Length: 114
Length: 109
Image (tube, rainbow over all chains, first blue to last red; front, side, top):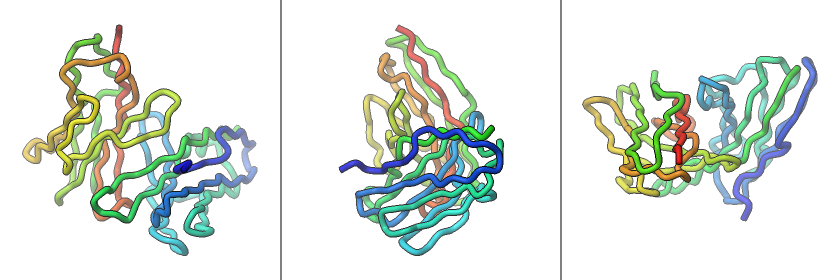
């Protein structure tokens, strides 16, 4: 039981390049999330998916797209990377059980855009 | 709009000293509040939540609606408590979780 798995752990891009961050969870969770973490800003929600087949914008969605491929996987795509997207990205999932609500996080992806 | 404020980016205490990590929030409804912790080279994980009224690793946090605070406390700091601590507020489901900027706790031996 790996929990939430993110790949890659590190990535360096040039401005304008594209890439996809992958996330998978093996806990049968309905909801999945992408956050970015920046110094002095905390964690900010980029996109979330309440269930398979649905996605919604969070606080900072501009420059990103997401795909909820199936119940397990939720990917984040940067179509044309910008230096402002240099950040640490976290994927998370949450259980549908209201008695045990909490977010389970991946280990993060450190992205640098030059 | 909901907001979470953690006024200290860094808090340094000596081993055995009391710890208080401050968290204030603004929200018009009834919030659910959490503390998440990230130890070095580990992933972010839930430490405790106010509805559970539990003590985890010696830490407690009481929701004070009058002062809109949810401070995290521990009577005697240990070196293994050194980590990054995030206060979080949830409303209307997990898509509306707002995190504070985090406080780095450094316990000095």
